[in-house]
Structures are given as C-alpha cells and as structure tokens.
Length: 283
Ligand SMILES: [Zn+2]
Image 1 (cartoon, rainbow, N blue to C red):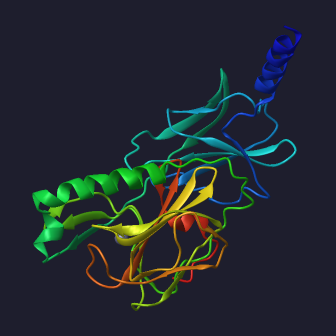
Image 2 (image 1 turned 60 degrees about the vertical axis):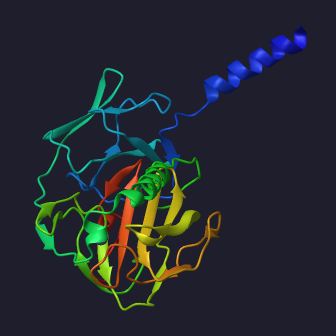
C-alpha cells in the first residue's frame, strides 16, 4: 500500500514538473528570422511580461512554440500557413495578451510550366494507390515533432546553384492551377553534391512518384526538411547526420523539367520559406 501511495506521489510530482511541450531550449533563437507573412514565421521576443513557461500559448489557432535561449529570455515562433487570411496575430497566454503583430502581405508570383509526360499530369488509375501511400508517408514525415534539443536553426545552402523557383509561387501546369510551390528550387548540374543544411536524423530515403529520389530529415523540435529529384541517395532511413554531410546528388527523377534540387522546410507541419533559415544566401 505504501509503495502504491509513493508511486502516486511521484507520478503527481513528475506530472507537475513536466515542461510545456511547446518550450524548446536553444543557444540562440535568431533563426528562423522574423518573417510575419504567409509562408514565413512570426518571431517575437518576450520581455518584461508576466510569462509562465508551463502555460500554453495561443495564437489565432495556429501552431506555436517557445524558444528559450537563456534564463527568462524567450521568443515565440508562429509558423504562418500560405493560406492564412487574417491581418493580425494576437499571442495570448490564458487571458494575458503577450503581443499583437501585423501580418505582412507578400505577393507571390505565378509560374506556368509545361509537362509533356502525360503520366505526370494525370497519372493512370493503377498509380493512384502508390501516390496516395507516398502522400501519407510525406504527411507523417512533415508532422514529426520530436523533443530533440536544438542548438540553433541557422541553415547553410544545401547545394550550390541558381534559385530557379522561389517558395510560394502560384503554379500552373499545362495551364491548370496546381498546389502552391511548397519549397525552393535550386538548379544545378546533375551529380552536384547535396548537403544537409542542419544536423538531424534521416526519416525517409526512398523513391516517390512525383518527388523522385527523396530524403526527409528530422532536425528535432518540429523542424523537418526534404530534398527531392535526386539522382542518388547517399543516406538511409535512421542515419544520424551532421551539418554539411553529403546526403545525395542533384538529379531529375520524378516530375521535373530539368536537373534541380527541390528543397522544402516544415515547421510543425507548416511549409515555410527556406530563406528565413539562411543568414546570407549565395543564390
Ligand atoms: Zn520545386
């Protein structure tokens, strides 16, 4: 009986000490840079405000989390979906309004491409189960949130080349409207090395119908990135990789119009402009 009571006591104690899952500890919280527009990340400092680390933050129903970089110094990050329509985001904790921030407008351009391989425009029925399965696998990968400790989310460019299509572009394939461009395209010759811009763990290394040879990397704390259309995969699922490690080679596998890297970054499952994780771009 006494043991049972002790067990209950300790579980209550542990429960009350458990940190809010939204709080992540880092060396600095400079990245992603404050980019309060659809497809960007709102980043706001919490200073001189009554702030309870254990109480959840609410931001217009959007996912959010807290980056803690030193004692009593925090930033709140709110990844903003591309289709977000409101003009302000109020950040609250309980009844306490922490901040109210204007959402900036961003004009994304249109892009029209022609794909002549009909199989990639309207795939045949027998390909649909494969496409659905790969869609589900990528959805699961994008939404990975592991409690890995993050140090700093500053990224390096994964491949040297020319940015051929930026994030968020409104795309038309053979004049039909398609999903917004959820990544950044960097054109480079086939065989150019692709490195991981940040350390993490490989969660997918496979061949998908649209993405071709593709790698997904979990960087921890809700940050995931992916690399598509590779000619060669140099890592496998479960590999732990460090910033700068070669993960594959540029190619033109899957639905493409030429050799390039399609690079995606997800924060809490929300596609984000990779540029907000870069200090200076060589593109
Ligand atoms: Zn792309």
